Image (cartoon, rainbow, N blue to C red; front, side):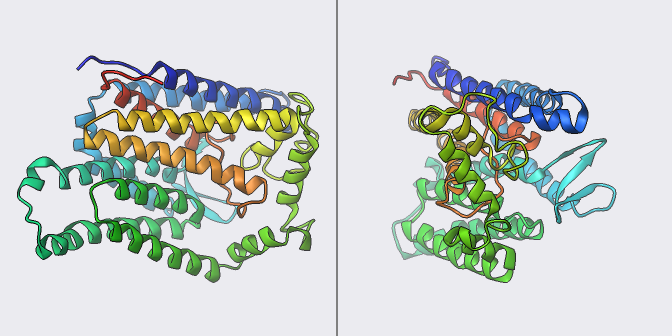
Length: 379
């Protein structure tokens, strides 16, 4: 098969990374000057993360996909150990009341961000083996097959979700858990599994989500704040109120790059969770429309890559990565404009932060690697 890289997807991916750096450069300048005496401190950190992500992405690009499939259980096992290591003294770091980070010198990284990649690879590998032509040939279309599906496929999948749920619950990272759960359920659904499996695990997920919300007052408060942000405009409702002010004040064409007023301490988490609000303020409805269109194109090209390969592992991996990034993007955007509770998850490629950006660029490398095995790609 002729090797071919999707130039459309490569250009789109580069545009998202460059635009993300451009907005961080203008958005972070005031805080960089205030805390570090120069306007480029946060930009240089973001550039460093991009460089690390690109290096790892190139390395991944050079590794045969069948090798990644083979070592995916090892990668997931290492990632699970790192998730546990965040609770160890002198290794884990607690920030904002949550234990999610591991310290490396003066820097930290978040293992749960890389879990999004390793668990996708593992599930894609496991499902592609379970539904390989060799295995299918030995199946019989009987009640026994349905029983075997439940025992050998559904229950192990549910066990995987349970382990991940426990680890991320202990880290108070339910938002990341939600992104990963939706991604894995999507991958499970598009594989050759019975529909009722997906329906059952979805219902279990809804019940679990309700329990997670009810047992932690601050999560319940986020839902109540979404319904009535005006009830506490200077407290719990401050972020959503200021986000809407930022987006609304941008009008149609925006105030211009670097001209945001909300970034000067008015909008909480302006560089990370709320970056879309600043984009709306500086570029207006036109800029927001362009950004959302870029993510829709990202979804379209990613699904075309997945649909253009006959290899089940490639297809499931591609769908997993594209679901993770686009779903996370639209959850972040929806939370900023008041359609979803404030989640604390970053906007892919645009929010400040190293771990998520490195993981996302590695995901791009995997998608480009998969597209290389496609003989023909057309719009």
